[in-house]
Length: 170
Image 1 (cartoon, rainbow, N blue to C red):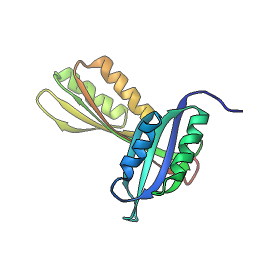
Image 2 (image 1 turned 90 degrees about the vertical axis):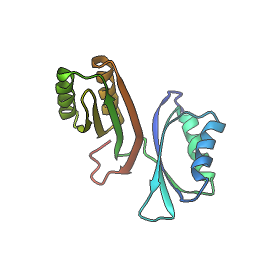
Image 3 (image 1 turned 30 degrees about the horizontal axis):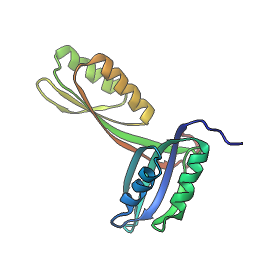
């Protein structure tokens, strides 16, 4: 029985580290009109292999198609479905808050402490915070900041993940 419920899914790919691979994989998503929520890529301990973490929103049938099409690509070495796996998954996010007064700065330092972020840059009327945590926790930080401050700028790096050893994280 297939479910047509759209939900967030995670895929990890090992791919050949060569020019054009990122373009081919992102082209698969755009060519088929699949929703690419996040794509992060970096080299592994083997300089000839890169690892991609893809976040997509799809129903079960579409998700199975995505995995099959990725597996067919010559440059793809291995496809790992992280959706129902215990995984350590984090994303880096920077939030710059401008036009801060003294009270705003005090609140931003408190937010950084509460949400396990850190202040990485500081100016006369601006503060730059860094967060490395799950996308859901980063979403909560963004929502809070949008409510509390008038001028924010957000940059998110996309999730990266690795299978858990102890099966304690999801």
